[in-house]
Amino acid sequence: MKTLSLILIVLLLSSCGYFEKKPERYNGRLEAETYELSARLQGVVDSVWVKTGDAVKKGQPLLLTNRQRSALILQQQSAQQEELQANRAALQAQLNQAEAQLALNRLTWSKTKNMAEQGAATSLKLDELETAVQMAEAQTSALRAQLRAIDTKKEQLKSAVELTRLNWSDALLTSPVDGRILECYINPGEMAIPGRIVLEIADLSLLEATFYMPLTRLDAVKPGQNVQVYIDSREEPFPGQIFWIADESEFTPKTVLTGETRSTLVYAVKVRVANPDGLLKIGMPVEIGW
Image 1 (cartoon, one colour):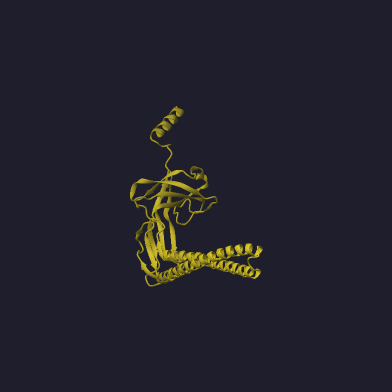
Image 2 (cartoon, rainbow, N blue to C red):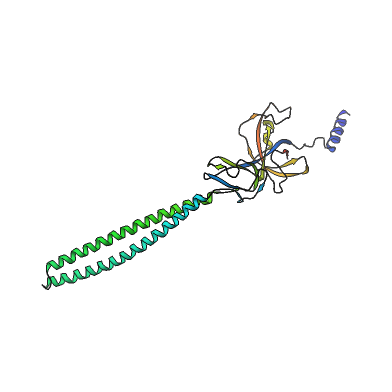
């Protein structure tokens, strides 16, 4: 009779869902990948087009440092390029003339040599023509060397122009991602220095949340596992995915306020959650479940 009663109690509890597995929930806090931007060139800031809290798009201009120096250098380099081009054209004309003279001298020397072999020309005349050929060869060689030197200078100047144009381009700082300005550390008129952070941007399109699990429950999660991310202001969860599980345990951080697990060893687990509508915010507390 007792056995029958126990069976009936178990069946009753099962029908009421007493033995159903309860969903697991863990606390976390949303974070975003941040970008700390610094000026690429040293210079006075001409313009800052954003302020803290502004939403920005990838490629959007954010800040401009003074370009006057680059503009003056470009003008100077452009004049140098024109001068080199004019000098090269003049040298090429001289080389063409020298090559024509060399060809004529060689032809005259060849004919005179045949005449000298027949006794119709003197060896002195042949020597004079041979000297003329050698001088013409030396002149053409010198002109070719000057042309090569000019071509080398043109390539060097071309590289210098590209560098100046790069400096011109680097004076404009643009956003690397769609996001929001977390901090703006500089104002127009101040000096921007390479390596010194001027803007901090957060990528809000994809946020991350970290929660902590005890070793006894670690087998319930794995990388690539889909989870649900809940916020207080909305009943419907956001889809998330586990992408990282810590290899080493740690003491539960103080931010996790669950009394039972505050002093236990746990493993950190990270989840990514898409934020296409911008409803999720940095620092927002969430619950992760499955």
